[in-house]
Figure 1 (cartoon, one colour):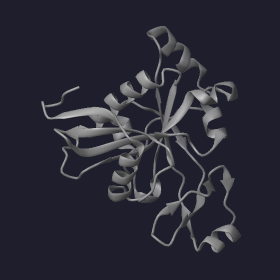
Figure 2: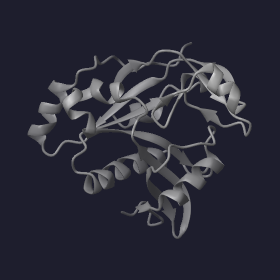
Figure 3: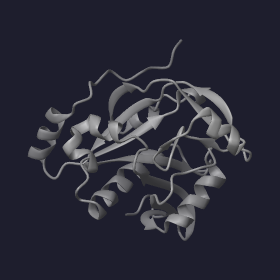
Length: 210
């Protein structure tokens, strides 16, 4: 999997991927136990694409139905060093998805979210032909003592204001996130079936205002 004869994509240990994400992603955090694919330039790690189970089972069930929620996961973090050319992102996503399908052939759909609060529209997902499923609802997240953004649901538990205060976390309002979906079909016929079976409505891509 060469790109300009310098880059390759391969599965890497979760702990290595998590540490890279914590250092280089604006959230400084990542779900526990993600499946990570590294972008390597020779032997140097220059990017990580991490897949992890979404926090909400309802979100997973909203794609192909409750019986198939186990076939949906999330592209949880995508981060590259700033020095990498912009077109590297789309190349990286494409190959990471192919590698994920090899390792997890039971998966049919990959969700990804673009954080509107950070000014993200999900342009890279648009450039890689992901389906657009609209936005999630605004929510209250939390900032911990280290500056890490904490989801209001942790390890299957909804975090109340009182629980957050006990942890020393500060509430922060966040806008709804743009939701995108990649499908990972087993064949061309299966692709047509999956497209017809998506439960969530689809919308035109959002554009930069002004």
